Amino acid sequence: MAKYRPVYMRIWKDPYFEDYSPSMKLIFLYLCTNELTTESGIYSISTKTISRETGVPDKTVRKLLSNGLKNVRYDFDNNCVFIKNFLKYNGGGRPELLRKSIANNYNEFRTPLWDEFINRYPDYSNGLQTVGQPFNSISNSISNSNKGDSKGENKRHVAEFVTLTLKEYQALKSKYGKVNTKKFIKKLDNYKGANGKKYKSDYRAILNWVIDEVLNSKQELQSIGKKYERVI
Image 1: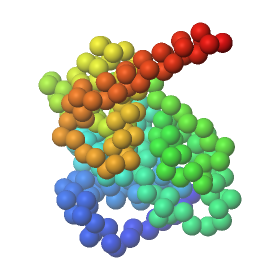
Image 2: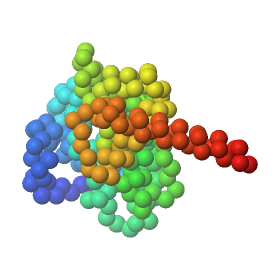
Image 3: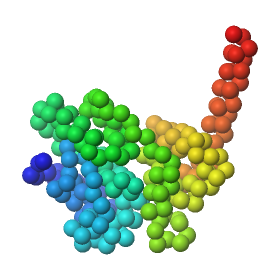
């Protein structure tokens, strides 16, 4: 384990970092420099630990992690965090030793955050398999992020580029089922990631066009399959 972590001076000029509140800046710097950090940027840490060591109330820590610090994802089900650019700025040393350390991290911390790591760092993901996130985990994560909010209006990342409230997620799951809801979220996530598109409401985007595209595509595939069966 490293005894120190570098913090680049230009962070203070980063537009996103400049817009952070004092609590957000403190939490971000803490997550990048505390003794639990790993070479992969994925490690286990509870919100209570973050709260205790930074002095930021646990409720505030949970809210900030739920609403998304830039380049930080938190898995509330498994109490794991992923600092997305950590490897980019801390990945020194021999590549084979770094890959070994990352493989050890993968075996130690079981979290769907590894799916994002694999997509982000394919050169360091040999032998790693996607974990996959069951959708009851998404529901639990949203529930955790909305504790103390009777209206359930706080949004939670259910994919890298998609946020939903608990109420919105449950509405989709209730009407279309878990499998289709997963497809809707994946479709929108890929679209936003590829095009840099932003919506005021991802839920409304799903209702406006994603559902139709996914279900129509599914029907077309089923139709093609039936025609193929008749041919053979």
